[in-house]
Length: 328
Image (tube, rainbow, N blue to C red; front, top):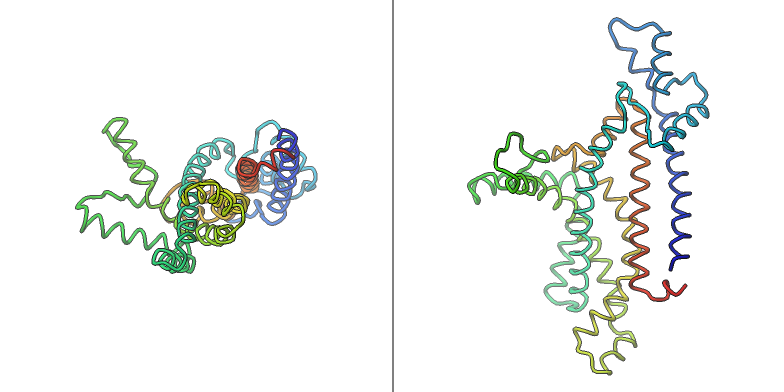
């Protein structure tokens, strides 16, 4: 097991270096920080622009490999450089990464767990009313883009607040309410009220995907010999399904876990913009429009690390479910 994890970590370290390097090089080639100074009044002299861009390691007149070496050496020290405005990238990223990963991880956990449970139950009750209902709802959700789903949730929540709850119970904008004086638990409740709709927006699509995948995997093992053997040895149907069939059927699903995390980061970008959460996704869009090479590279690096951490978690779950991996 230790050797398995060591090999995985080494592979992931190489992949992070490659992904981060490509992200920086692509951003440095595609974005043009110099254009930010073109519309200023009065227009600064070219020498002043060059000096400012050089100080920020954004001067396109400096060889690309030299700019990359400067950026990479800073990253090794934990310094992602400065934004086009001259502020440290680290300060803004630290705050925003907590916002994004809190939202994404909660959405991933809720979506994957509920999706697996829904798919397993649908397989056990194949062609029953629950199977047909979950199948229809899954295809309906998969056909609706995240942007549309998020706006539909806002409309439904606004209607429910006015006509059902009689007060603003489901909050539709921001991470928290300013000026609260309700104490610790009041702040916790306020955070949860702001968290409900974005989490649902991210989780619903995952539930649909995982339920379809888990249902197919579960159907493949329900009639397997090891399930019949477990029943023949005296295990009840429920225990045979949960201890043997579900455990085996989840092995391919946990492999899919890491790839889903990457897709969820993309979905979180739209969710953050719609619900007013100031996270990495929102900043990535703003940085591309402002030609902020260092911020784009930093967010890309964090996304690569996050996806590979999810992949490591999937490997650990795979090893927990399949003893052959631990033995190898």
